[in-house]
Length: 590
Image (tube, rainbow, N blue to C red; front, side):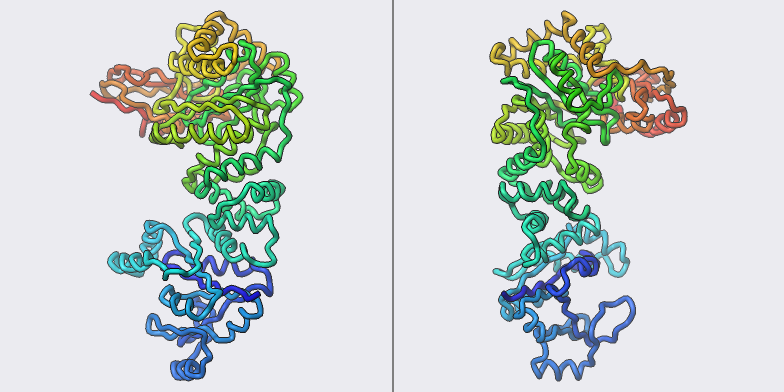
């Protein structure tokens, strides 16, 4: 078979030369050759490695038919040797660095032409060109206009975006070159196809994911694959991906017709709804083995807050024993359905600004499936600063959860919720656990918003029980279990079975944050409050966090207390207080 002629083009600022230099040592020897350009320029340091030629010799060689193609740019003559045809005919793939102006001519000359267009978003290109300080803004604008010109009709092409790390850009170029190479084995070919934006089949994912999980690919290739999965997943692929993930772990067998679970997409500070829902549902008699994550960027995850009360690093046998004894548990998922895929994607989500919603659907539901759940209720908070921005986005994501769940054989009910303000008063493990216990104790100071949201989701889960059937009946049962103390007693039983943690002996140090003027609390920025709590030491320091004293809608007088920052570390507390002084996160209106 004839080889391909890969013609690599790209505008200034796209980083084409850097990617070509990086990919060269990664290609299989003997299958690829880089075309050396003949240029009427002397070879000097810091320029392309090329063959030099005088204008007279260049014109003579052109007349003798020694060039495959020639062109002129920047006052110089460029050419590619005609001998490249022989290399292509022998099955060798040729890579040439050139100008998009030559594509039409090459298209007429070479049947195996494939154009690789290295690019980046216009704002990235503009910033890179500006940083080079070689051109005026007007010259940069003209370059960017040329960069947006369409390729000739009918040309086979693939676009390689170089908008993230250099390593990911190199992996993308490598994938574009190797996906059709004869030496590329099947699982690797699937990886490269996905990196290039192609849709994969169920069988492709079933073969590919085990290779990713066992470490068959370099980290940059895995990251490029995961980025592609956040940017180019069809709804069918989400199902295929979820199904392939379920095949990697044995499914827990509970020997019950109905095993329920509750999950939140997160992003709402203080929202420890799950820790209230689990004992209510368990007290009703349904099995609800809950595995939760620790905080990644927030001040606390469910596992962090539960660890204030009980051990959460349970193994499978300990989880089973707890559920058999109490109907429920609240354990850390790190020992149970840990995923190297999630370990790889989490560090790049924020730096690269990835939208992981579609990926999360496959990840979350595959974990619920392997944990043995048959019915799942999902909370999808939406807020301007969160993963899900609007009610419409949350509603669309809810429908996606339900359809993918159905494809896996699960009953999934997903509900949008307003995530624009913190839920509860405590932000940080110990303070959030305090709020949970106050709700379970029916304490007069219990946060009403936490109680109401927990009752809503508990009622939705109970409504899935054929013996309950409706939300209204589920709500009545949930309220009774909470008000009677049955839910608190069930939480105590879960804590004892998991292993109660000793009471915190450290004394919390506090700093006050007060209002700088009169007004009414219009909004509370949960991201800012969480950042302050993290600066104070949360979640590593369980006692650290922010204790809110004013909620949205509350009137506030100047110098009135908005919240307390607490920590066991005086230095971190001081830094957190300085951060709050710069921006306390409360929006007050007159």
